[in-house]
Length: 377
Image: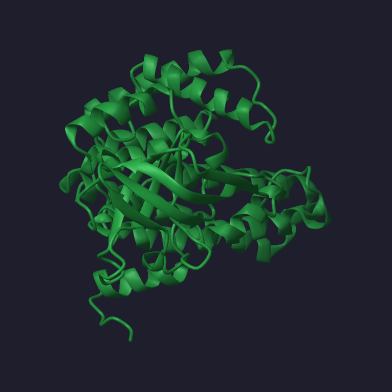
């Protein structure tokens, strides 16, 4: 497998790098983390700049290699992250591009790319987190609508979203994986209540969402009725396969910064810490190569990442936690100061073995779908 970039891809890298150098100094200051309307406006404003410059469709309109270069270069340059556009650009958008009808792609993809609309993710429920297929939010067919009732939790960006990628049970009598449908729900529909949840790091990026007889048009269903689990696997393959790529680049940058800080404050003299940082350097270099391998595989499968994304997500979750544990060693007593770099990142890293599918679930996927081991009973 050839992991080298083509001349055309390197030309794209050079153009992007030049454009980032010109535009980043002109950006306005970032809003406060608690200013969600301001964050939404800032994040969508950045997406509009990308769109106007011809980079708006890179998350699903371009090849996986171009997407990888884009994520690598924007992270290296310190460009804004997708932020409030996370679900639309990295989850819902790619899923609709892969599974939606021509009418659905026309309706939803362009507004996401232009930075006009924000999506949230309505997958997990209080009693259906790791066992996502056990979800109980019910969608009853009533003419041209589904009438949806139930609740969701950890609904990313629900407080500022226009649309929700929603998993519902459309056939309660079917086996649990076969009675699910994937809907696009307008967040201004009557019957939706959103309550923000504050995380350990102090942010409110998630919410619990309550649905009381919410009407969603049948035309908003992506894929066939009761085929939502298969569509969901497409969504999760993007979430686990490519959505964390930019974060690997960021972690490699943090590792260099930690080494510099250790030299500065004298912690570099500790051989145990040096070995730890060296091992992490090897870990993230390997993860980057795994990312390239996954992208190369996606090139051969129509752009949809394969189950190798679960291998990546499983190892990356622990590597990120180990990185910020090492940051605490470098900072010493200052690791308790929330105003110091990396401290809040350490708190947020605790969620990575849960988010996007728990590590236990990833091990099952690797065991059953890659190694061919029998299913547990």
